[in-house]
Length: 65
Image 1 (cartoon, rainbow, N blue to C red):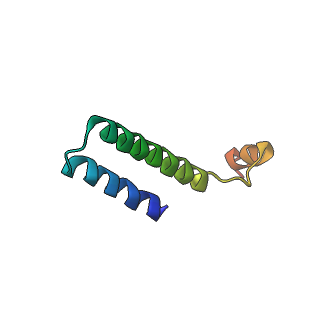
Image 2: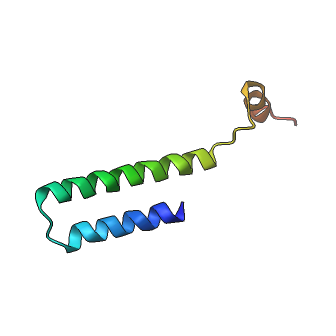
């Protein structure tokens, strides 16, 4: 996760710092967007609790008092 965030920062820095030809700029932008999407997907998978099934979600909403 940290490596993906670092790679996104490096790609954005390269895109803003160096004057690249349009094809290289487009290719770097596609890699940067793909890297960001992959990082978000991994983050959402880490946040999701896979142990809760359909019955677990019903129990979680139940107020025991």
